[in-house]
Length: 113
Length: 113
Image (cartoon, rainbow over all chains, first blue to last red):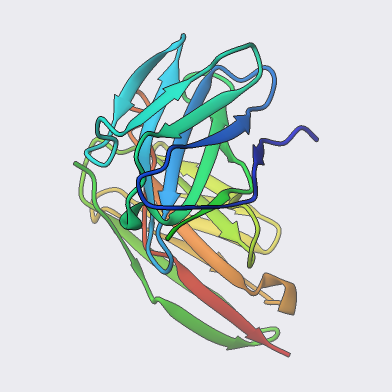
């Protein structure tokens, strides 16, 4: 069964550094998402992406964040200048079309020191 | 925006007993309610979902009920097994509009053999 994949599984970075988190959504899916989960807290929506553009974003998704689908398979989340409070598990999710189920990747644990 | 409350935060049951997890939501426009199971260190996995045009849905030992008037929905697991031990998240979404999921804080279910 196809699955969403994410790399790396764990990323450690220093405050102020840029990080890029990578996701490969399920191949025939058209909607892509990033969520994050701070340790012990709920999963929070960051951004959704459809037709090569952002369709929605939350308040968390400020100018430090950007997303890109550089080719037909990858979907990336870039954090330009990481802060300590960016430490979290970041999940990518994809959805086949409009009102369908979302499937999650295994997550990337980002640790900012 | 949507707010989802989930209770209890932890739940311990004896193997073979039933477990019930409850969620309430705030936005009456929400009409899709998935449940995800997350085992330690793994991705959230969709286990069952319900749309607002039905009041109950069953899949083997798992069932979800929805009360749109009261804006609450519940997950019922019968004949629990040790492998049911995980964190369970409820979520809500406006099926026809924005596709972002709003999650509850999660319930850690422990099934004691």
